[in-house]
Amino acid sequence: MTEFTPFAATIGGVLIGLAAALMLLFEGRIAGISGILSGVLKGTRDNPPAWQAIFLGGMVLGGITLAITQGIVERDFVMTELSISPWLAIAAGLLVGFGTRLGNGCTSGHGVCGIPRLSMRSILATLTFMGAAAATVYVTNHIFAFGGLS
Image 1: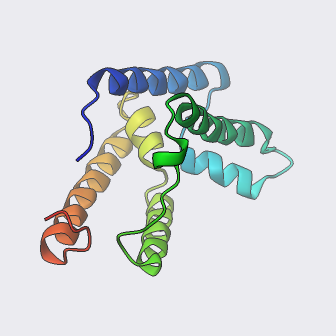
Image 2 (image 1 turned 30 degrees about the vertical axis):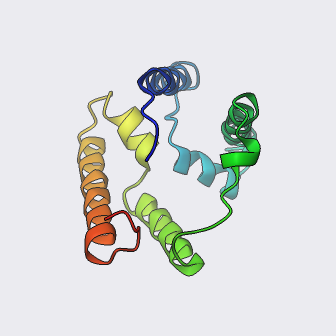
């Protein structure tokens, strides 16, 4: 069971929204993580990956900083065991990557940045991936019992 932390969750949500709004305001770009990662991996002359790499590095450093300041580095920061096979985890990661390409974006691009702009494409994409996520959780936990949370 996870701990219910409404204050921390609210602060985190506000910071994510503020970061997305500032990026759109000052850079004119959507803070979609899959698009930013794609920019780093592709890297062209017209679109150098420096700002994307800094953005992704900031996300990683933010998580590390939180772990260090909260004293959870040794306890929870590094997962030491998987409750599913590594092959299933790899397959799941590849399917998520395929889905972000198929849907032209990820949860941060569509859900955090697209819905506030009233983008119909983002609204439909978010409804689709949230519905698929709910169905996947139900199937894995109650039908196949992969998650062991039934």
